[in-house]
Length: 419
Image (cartoon, rainbow, N blue to C red; front, side, top):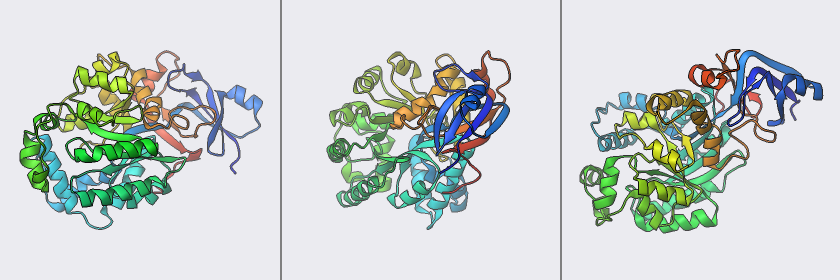
């Protein structure tokens, strides 16, 4: 059992509340016990004080969509000598498959460990992680990260899908209070429609949230609507799925998933670049949360999500970095700043700060323990410099200029990867 400790800084900043000048946290046994000013907490509790003058204490960030297994993708690309010059979204997918086919034993684990380190060092303490290999589950649980592991379901072949399905459900049984479980039917164009009802029933009966890539590209929209375009003509033959091409469905990805009952308040819709107003209204009616990945979308040249529609409909929003196969870093600081520039007329610093804290936690279903610094929650926090002394626009200064100095996970100072 750890000793109670007070952590204090020039500012304590939580989402949706005014910054506290001279703010502090009382931490004990990995949890926040009390929040207030340093004078209040020191007067009420006998505990050592760790001070960070000139800095701000803020919650650890929640990266709502990651693929940490792909962190070493840039080095794999160089090592495997796969020419990487995708001109379209489908070219990128094919290159990704080629590179993964050339990996050796241990590559994915080393990549995962590096991803954990990069998250923590940039102030991210919880993730919504897509897991392709359930055998990696113990390594996630050995890391300091919190969040939710979504076990990926992909493909058409019945025997392979059944094996993947059984392994995913078994891995879901290993969830803990710190790392919960969920399922990730990858996308409407990579999974057989005949499996969607099975996924719906398991998600409902086992209380397993879903994370689904939805309408990431125009190619997906064309494929789902009438089985046309590069996904049908190039990707399906490349992976040997020609026999699984379906007749035209004449609907969007959102409509297809809704028909099969996969949209609910525990569904995470990732990307949503090419959703229509009608699609967005369906997402709102079903209570779905949307995760935006703007840097990934820009890198893959798939377009820009209609944030103004999501905001108008009050759809819950979170932010994710996706993977280093389609991004330059796993830093939510960089993602926030990019989003503020990209959506400069639709997004404020306070809103994007919520997206990487309480919004991300709510989207992952972990708001009871993460996303803000409140009594009873995990003591996951960052100490950030460049907040300045003036009370005016302190949150804005932190968002645009903040630099991570220290990261605490469960009340313990992070000093290196333990994955």
